[in-house]
Length: 329
Length: 293
Ligand SMILES: Nc1ncnc2c1ncn2[C@@H]1O[C@H](COP(=O)(O)OP(=O)(O)OP(=O)(O)O)[C@@H](O)[C@H]1O
Ligand SMILES: [Mg+2]
Image 1: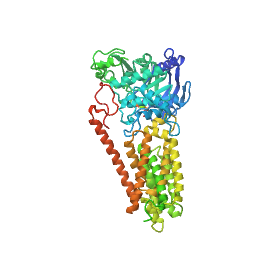
Image 2: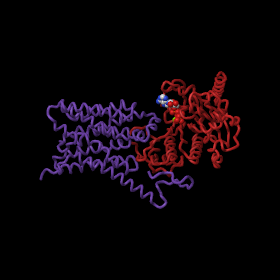
Image 3: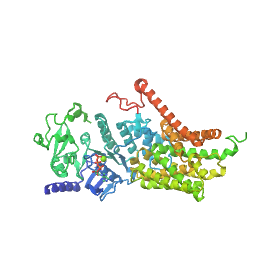
């Protein structure tokens, strides 16, 4: 136990000393010692991290880790019990764009993609809103920036999940945010759409000098594009560059028991053993496929930390021929 | 032959019905896109209790209906946030109906006036009577126009409004207030049982037929006007209750909208190349990605 505490403390200390953002990148958002209580339970405890302009950051955590709660706290929609959230520069609400998790859109809603994006420009204002050529052009430009010009006149509810995602991103971009928060934007997307969406987000971050925070349970699609990572587990967070955080020692300290981090075919598998845990299902890492690799009865076949397993039988999903190439930017 | 449906004796009726249709068309659009049909059903039922109470107390029907509409709306806005919407709505409805049955049993004679409020009785509205309802109608339309954008965005997804610093619960409360006002207006004309068919029928057809929000609102208003005007003429000649025609036309509009939508979907599906709306323009990917919905 003391070792874990020390490890966590040193991790946090190193973060506090120097906010290590990418070279030349300035901080857009600074979160310090954030804690959130929900239903009498501390869902987030002492979470600290920075987000840099032009950077894509992954917010990684398994189901129930507190990703949505954290994003809602950043938006001011969730009361926090401790800590500060500081947004640099413009302080108004429009400076943060948000794409919520699982928006269930009614397919019969007479709202076209362009209407939804227009509501992104001024949806919070009073009055009906007059249409102008300038507004129309701006909507077209926004749709184009997410590669959704061809969807402009379709009803949003009738679009596929991936198409809706693009339109919602355009909606969020409409207020020219300095910070874009996306909650599980990759859920239910096929391989190609996932890759396209991540590429798009990285491009938007760079071209707009915007900080982008992507909440996801699967770290892999983000790996080629992600400068930094905020890893949530057990209510706590570890943050830094991917190499600094996605390591066995750091994640073991975070989870409070041993965690293996495996690298295979350019993918990362975080394997969390639940031996030290109360119930099944608790504490599984974001990559449940890893469960076959360590812990439990089959523990002896676990390869050593940081070693690439040779065969594909361990993680069949990762062994499709196109998977490794698919992540090339 | 002097007293046709278009004689000057009917002026008040036409004006009143027109105000009612415009307001019901606008508010009804949001009822339909927000899935608030149950609330639109419950508020008039609760407000009918107000009419029975007004008859008992000897005050104006409009005052009784208005008070109880507001009461129902306030209760829904207050308790609907926490618990499940439909359960709260049902409990408010049940509570008010219970009170209504008490009021009815207490009134000495079976009030014909109260009974007509169930099914509507528009054929003898004086021009002077139009003024209070027109005022409520204008106020209601101003309210909806004021919150239009955030209400529309909240109807797409409440989280999107919340992310912009606007409370979706507050938007819902204002919307319920507009629903209460529309109910107060429409109830004496089309009757408590059928207010909601005037809101749902035209608006549901408009939702299916129009592609964008403002034209859907306009179409909803147009169909609501057509509904009440046609119903007045039909009721005048047939002596059947106005509500019968309003209700039947409401169902007709809905079926018409659905039918046109289905036809459009089918013709798109069978069109060469299956150009179902904007195509992705790439041949990659696992086949068609969008269902015909
Ligand atoms: N209103 C609430 N009251 C009590 N507990 C809550 C409430 N909302 C969320 N929680 C709990 O807080 C924890 C974090 O939830 P959150 O939705 O933030 O997780 P998440 O990381 O977004 O998960 P997922 O990947 O499933 O979306 C969960 O354990 C959940 O049960
Ligand atoms: Mg979540």
